[in-house]
Image 1 (cartoon, rainbow, N blue to C red):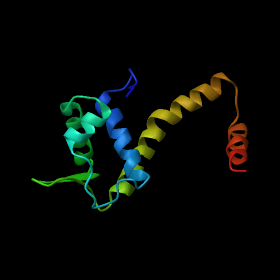
Image 2 (tube, one colour):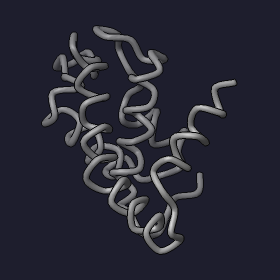
Image 3 (cartoon, one colour):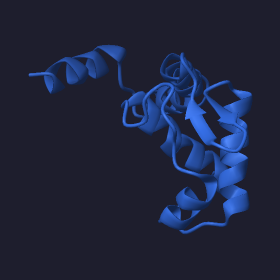
Image 4 (cartoon, rainbow, N blue to C red):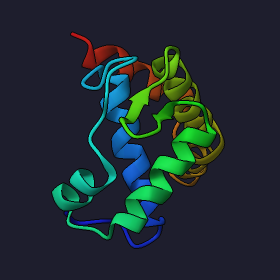
Length: 119
């Protein structure tokens, strides 16, 4: 797998995991792949995957059943969406606004493009 150079690999793995949860490919109270299995799949060191699991466990999106494995929390999907939304609002959107300013684009142009993509 190809990873971005400007973001920690464990955070990129956490993003992949969040997407799986948000898209309900990994359902709440369902067991997710083991650290080792995901490391093999992504071709990374298991310690890197463990950092992603720890990050999501600290965010209360996944939990560990000792001896059984990791599972998605009951409210994991909503928490995952909240985490991604906060990241979008604090990191992505300011960059988008900056580009809009540089390109002298109005919010109306963006709204029009947004509305046209639905049709």
